[in-house]
Image (cartoon, rainbow, N blue to C red; front, side, top):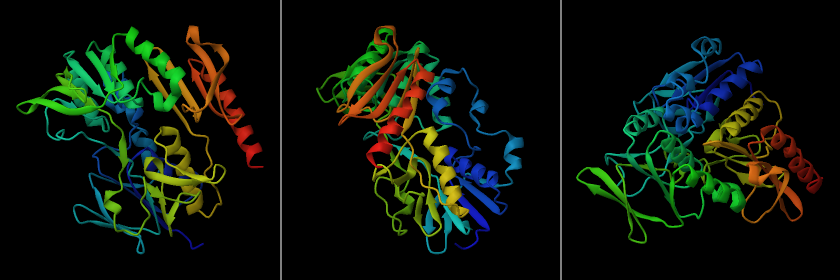
Length: 393
C-alpha cells in the first residue's frame, strides 16, 4: 500500500470528526482537512430532538469537542463549503464556491438528508429535524405551545412528539404504521410505547398515510390524511425518513445504491472511503450489505476506515445498535427485533416497564431489546454474538 501523507474528510459530522480522532490516536502525522457544509464545528445530532429542543441543553453543549481538543487534532476545518463534485481518480473534491481540495485518501462522511412532502418547501410552520438551526427554530415555535402534527412514527418522529408534549404543545402523531416505532422495535414494544405516548397526552392517528399539507396563504394550517380527514395544525414536523447525501456523487464512478457501496473496510474505491449514515458496507459475518443511521455506528465505522488508511487490516462487523429516550422510557436495541422474530421477556417485567426481551429467528438470538434496564441489556447482547459466531463458524 502506498504511503498516505494527507487525508481529506468531506463532512464535518460525528463520523467525520471520529475519523480525524482515530487517525491521530493511531499515530497519523500527515495533513488532515475537513470540509463541512454547515457553519458549525462538528456537533452531536441525537440531542437535537430531545435536550436541545426542550431547552435542557444550550446549543454549545452539543459540540463534540472543545476548542482546545479540536486544536490538538491539528486539522484544518473548512466550514460553510458544500461539496459538489468528486474526481475519484485524482481524489479531488470541488465545492460550490469553486474551491478544490485534494489528498492521498478521501473519507466521505456527508450523512443523510431528510425526505420532504410535496409542497413543503418554503411553507411557514413546516419543519424538519436535521440541523442545529432546525432544532432551535422549532423550539422557538414550541414555546408558544401550539397545535402540532408530527408526520412520521419512527424514532425521530416519536422523539419530537414526546419532547413537544413535555413542552406543553398539543401534539398529534400520524403515519402509516400502526404504532410508534413498530418497524424499529416490533409489535410488543411498540404497543407499549403507544401506551406511554397516549398516557402523556399525545394523540395517535396512526395506520394511515398523509395525502398533503393544507395551507392558508404561505402558512401551514393542517395535514390531510389519505382518508380525507384533516388534522388542524399551527406547526407540522415532517419526519418521514431520510436519504443518503449522495446526489453530488452521481457520475463520479462510485457505486451508489442506498448509500455509497463499500467493502468490509469501508473502502468504496482506491483510497476513497465512506463512513457514517452515508456508507453502505459489506458485513462479512452476516454476508450482506448494511447502512445504519445511528451515533454508535458513526464512531465505530470511522475507526475502521482510519485503520485501512494506515494499512491496518480491519473489517467492520458490528452488532447493530440504537437507543431512544422518550418521556420516562429508555429503550436500547441490539441486533434485529423485527416483526418476524419471536420475543421473550428474559429479565424484569413488562408490567413494570423495566424489562429485557430477546428476539429469536430460526431458533437463533438475533436481537435484544431493553426497556429501562441498560446494564442488563448490554450484558444480554453477548447472546447475539455467540449465536452469530456459531452460525458462521
